[in-house]
Length: 375
Image 1 (cartoon, rainbow, N blue to C red):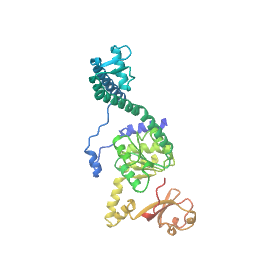
Image 2 (tube, one colour):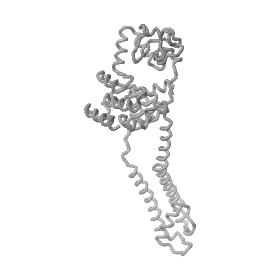
Image 3 (cartoon, one colour):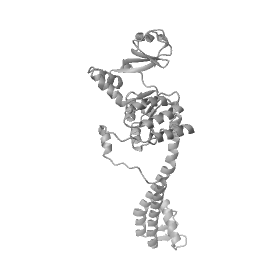
Image 4 (cartoon, rainbow, N blue to C red):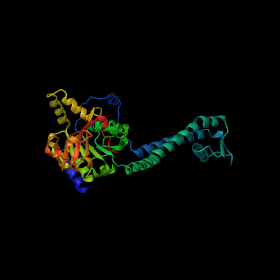
């Protein structure tokens, strides 16, 4: 763990950035919901919890002091049923008892003025002080205990989930696409350092964690070794590669997909442990170049990738009944290639004429027949 964190920090230094940092924002078209969000000012709270607690205590004491002052100046309206005399101690006692309870009857207001004060001023003060006490107890005690217990239960039950490290443009779209494809949003865990984007992810139903995805403790907190897949989209290639390095060490067998923006960094991402490296610019270039050879080529490639397309790509293991049969004879879809011993063979090659037990088949199937996502 120490070696990996040191390597991550040294690599970030050599690349000229710190882990978790983001590149300059890119202007993108916004949905109506996104545009509405930009119309509202957001600023992180700078008040510490202890300062907030001090303000609440000060406010409660000020209200009690106000009641004490009025009671003292109107002490002739009070009657002590014990000794008949009203001292400052009696006024202080009566004020505290009346604010915190309804009183014991040993000291009572006897004039109309004192009773009106108790009715229209002291009763609201009592209620407000109680709300302050209850709200403070909830925020600083009960809510913390409840959230810790709830998070521990969520962490204990995390299995087969998808971890999304980075909720930028690509990460957010990946989450929305997973939900459109039928995955329960509660089984998606989003990691980011930006509290604002995490609020958007939580609004989609995802479980969120504010933290640095390059650190072991962050990825361990989301039980990354029990995840079904990891998506890395940190916004910068150096940060994304560091996350892949850390994730691969903690989860040797979990598939990792990463977004890389510079072609020179694709090989580094694969060496770091990524199973799938996606370059948005290169993919867009493929679609544009394909469109020059036929106006339907790019449309079909988009159809394969989109959730609302007529066809879908599916990857699965060869079944026992298919072993020994050619790829062209599978009955579930149109086989386009197989993966055998980490090598890829297309439908036109000799190797696909006889399927083997460990082959992985990539096929095109009708969208309605595509498998539901693994839970």
